[in-house]
Figure (cartoon, each protein chain N blue to C red):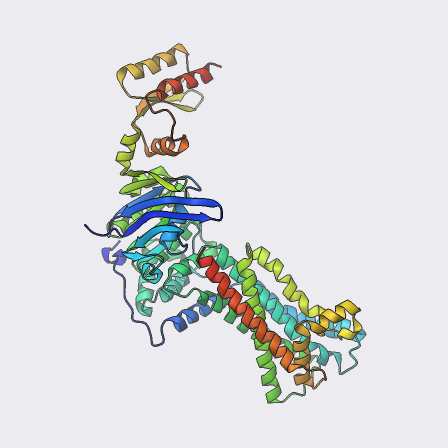
Length: 311
Length: 269
C-alpha cells in the first residue's frame, strides 16, 4: 500500500495549560481531499499549522509527502502550500507583484515564474485587477490571489485553512470551482472548514474534529448513515422552520403529523428530510457524547416543539 | 482551464552558487522598497519631518538656546540626523508588526526561504530611507548656513557611525515590531526611541538640564553618538568615538540576536 501523502499519529499539542490536540490520527492518500470539520477551537488550524511546519507538535508524529515535519521541515516546505484564514498577500503590492515575489522566493526560474504567475492570474479571473494594489481587492479576490500564490510551485500537497470563511456565496462557489480543478489534477488536499456543504462538495473523506480529537471519520455518506435519523421538516406560517427527528417510518411520521394536527400548528408545508452533514455535525459535536441516541429523541423533540408551540 | 497549468509537478531549479540566501534577501529588499514607495504619506512624513524639525530648531528655538559654541545650526544638525533615524526606525517596527499579524509571515515560513530575509528587507529599506532623509537634511541645513569643516575622511567616518546607529535602532524596532500585538501598538512603543534624542546633547547641552536629566542625558547612547558626529563634522570638543561605537555596536548585536531569538521562538511555539 502507498504511504499516505499526509499522515498524523497521536498528534498532541498544548499551548501552556490549554490542550488543543489530544491525539489526532489522520491519513490522506495521494490525490484525495480530506475535510477537517469542526467548530471554532476544535484544533483545525493547529493541525494545519503543525502539518505545514509552522508549529511543533508536543507529541505524536506528522509526515507530509513522506517527510517528518519536525525532522525535515525543508523537504515538507518544498512539497506544500498553505492558504490560511487570513489572505497571506502583501496589501501594498499589486496582484502581479505578489505572484512575482512569491515565485522568486519559491526559487522558480525568473521567466517560468512570470509565465506561471500570469497564467494563474488568468485562471483565477484576476487579469483585470493584476496591476492594482491588493489593498483595493475585495475579500473574494484576495482569497483567489492567495490561492493562486499557493499554486505557483504546483505543490503536491495543499493545505486550505477555512478557504471560504467570510466570503459571499458567489465568491465561495468561484473558489470551490478552482479548488475542484486543482484537485482534479492530482493534488492531495487537506481542507478545514466549519461549513458542511463545503466538506460535502469538495471532500472525498471527512474527519470531524472536536476538542482536539477526531470523533468521526469517513465519507460524507458514511457519516450521514452513522447518524441515521431523518427529520420531519415543518414550514410554519410565520416563516420559521421546525425540525422533528423521526426514524422515517410510516407510523412515526403519522404520529408526528397527528400531533401537529392536534395542536393546530400553522404548518404551511412539510417534508421528510434525509440527514445532511449538518445533522452529523450537530449530533457529533453539538450534544454531549453520552446523549440519548435517536430512538428516544423523536418523541422528546416533538414533545418539546409541540409544547413550545402550544404555550 | 488547461490541464498543464495546474498539474502538480514541481519545477526544480538548481540553487545559484552560494545558495539562495542572497537572492531571497534581494527579493525581500525589493519588496520592502516597493512598499515604501506605495505609502507616500509615511515616506513624505519620514523625510520631511526631520527637515521641518531642523528648520524649527534653527529659526524658532535656536535664537534662545545657548550652546556656548559655534552657530546653533552647526550644533543642531547632528542631533537632527540622529532624531530622523529614530523616526525611520519607528516605521520599520510598524512594517514588521503588520507582517507578523497578517498571514504573510506564515506564508514566508512555509516557503523554502529563511524568513529572516523578510526582516532584512525591512532593515535595508530603513537604511535607504534614512540615507535619503539624512542627505536632504544636510542639504537643507547647508542652505540654512550649516558649514561643516570635515574633510572626506570625516564625512566617511560620520556616514559609518550614523549607518551603525541606524542599523542598531532599526533592529531594535524590528524586535518591537515582533513583540507588539499589532501595527498600532508597535507605533506606540517606538515613542521611546523617538523621544531619546530630546534628553541628550542633540538639541541643548546636557549641562543646561536639571541634575537627573543631565545624568540621563550624559549616560544614554544618543549623547556620545551626537557628540562624536559633531566633533567629526565641525571639530567641536567632546567627541567620544569609542563610547559611541561601543553603544551602537553593542545595541546592534543585542537587537539582532534578540530579533533572531524572537523569530525562532515564534517558529517553534
